[in-house]
Length: 163
Image 1 (cartoon, rainbow, N blue to C red):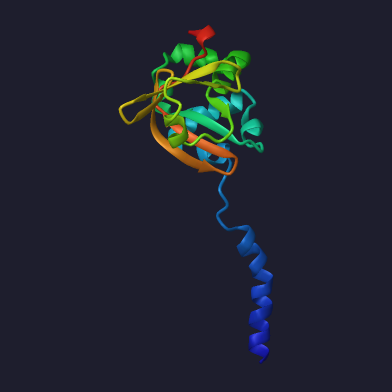
Image 2: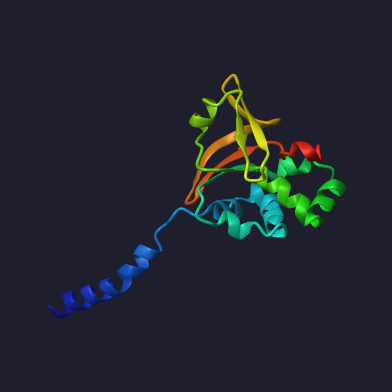
């Protein structure tokens, strides 16, 4: 009986830690930070002081460019953008839409515009079975986060005024 009581006491002490350390879905920033293909995006979010924003309640839909997408931008241009906080903030917020928009819902928006947090609008298109936003293809959709969803894109989006 003493062994049972000791085991029960040990389980009672450990159970809260097991419950709180269960794999809760991370925020958008947590998902991006844990995936090496988004290291440039995370660097840019940090430089623009947008980490706390995208860790917020949301929900948000983020069209997240990969490192390969950022590599399409000439290095000098990217370096200058990373040092220009106001412009970087505009570019990054152009990748964010308020609300949680899953790919199936976005596919129904073919030909329509989606207002970004930056204030401009993205054109939603469907080419065959491929979802596109402006000139970027969604290469992986519906990555869940606790405060929204991420759609991986192959090109960095630029607000019209910066093109």
